[in-house]
Length: 279
Image (tube, rainbow, N blue to C red; front, side, top):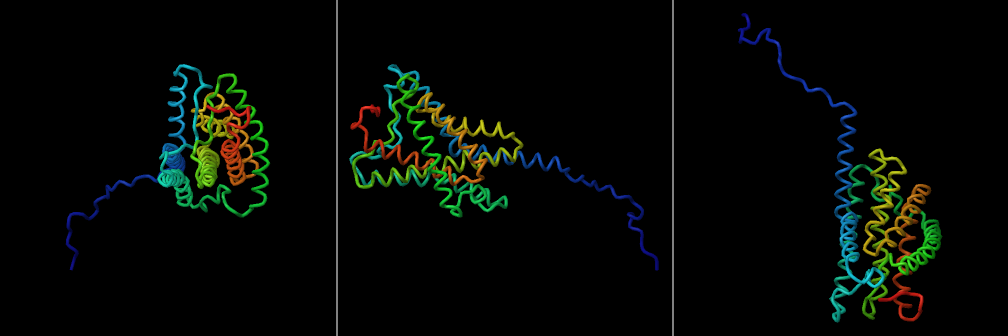
């Protein structure tokens, strides 16, 4: 018996086969994803802070009286006269500020990296990290204080008030937590994560250094021109140190020590020494 002809015998297939994407297309797709991811992370964290600082600086600049006669308060009370509610708000603010760091850890894990360990944020070298961090803090702290005093005297900076919390039992613990939170958020995101992403996007080391340093200065612009320039300089030093050591932990330590001394020192010395400006 023969096979019945159903009309398809000998008919050529006209199914179109899509070509495989070339390697360059895949790379461009990957870069587009990295650009979007980086912009979103910054928009949820310190990129948004930079925009806020710029608006605040414009407001201060256009206000009569000059910059040095205005104050920029870093740690203030959220509920004056209600210490337990104030404490709740302080802890809430510190905890939620760390969420972008958790997001970065999640994104790094999804790409196959060991989370924040790939940035050198771990406890594998505590002694060396602490020593390096203390050394960096000692160098930057003294120079930074002199630069702030000169900038304010010249009228380029607001009077920075590191803390204006009530005299309650949780004052110094909250100031320490705030300092550590600032250090972790800024160094993980603006230093280590941003440099990793810019390297992946093909930026040159110099361009990446400038981007990180200028962004760091930008979200301190609410303090004035001195705050911007001082933090740009600090950003350059931190990028060079991170490139050399390959670990962000020492810079987190350095930043935390700088803020702890600034917050705690102001709380203890303000109004008792003549060289420390107060509002």
